[in-house]
Length: 275
Image 1 (tube, one colour):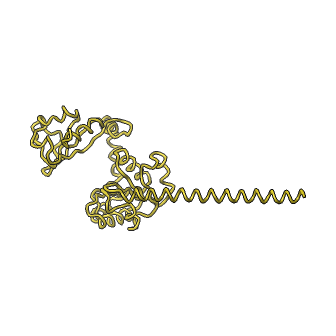
Image 2 (cartoon, helix red, strand yellow):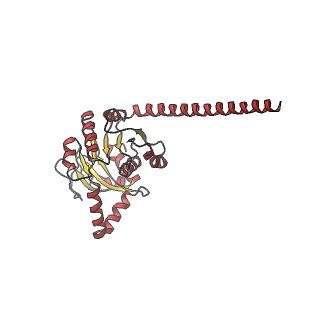
Image 3 (spheres, helix red, strand yellow):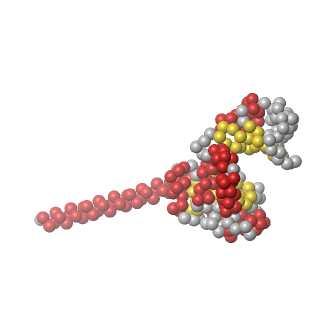
């Protein structure tokens, strides 16, 4: 009798363990399936978002900046483990797609045809070249910024469709030289880009019916309405820095301004005519 009871109880424990394990697996799979379905619905509704190809060190910095600016971001990465630092910092604020960005199907899944901009920050120049070419064919209006690891890759990336080429090696070398020659200038620029600070540099386009059209900087009331500082004005004729007070503003110009975030928000509202 004791042996029978031991066998029965052992079988009961085994059945309970297997049933609990099965339920855990099924519930986990179900939760993941529901999460993926929810994320896919959100992804399908995205428009004017940004795509970052590569979640390495460069891609993480790009994603941090875009999320800081309040943008919708889709990150494509082959290795699932590279999403961990971003997920720890930002949770579900970005969309993660595990796949190869050089494949057209992956770019389409990221909504490249509806995207506003794309950064390709992959380790190999040939991969960045392929992504830039494919993305340009899928979306002729897309703004593409590409990483170039070698100087000879830059002109090829331009031909492939990239609007801007960025060389981390080139920028790093210039930064190190500036740290030696102009440390206070570099410190100030870092201050404006520090995510923990409240100071930033922004660009503001002058739309139709803006209250500043046909007015000079002195009479535009920009400083009065926002306290932001106009560093430059970009337009077809050039990009004069530190424009004079009698510089006349026109529709389509882009102001490069420096200020605190609430000042920049006030300036955007004023330029748009919503104040």
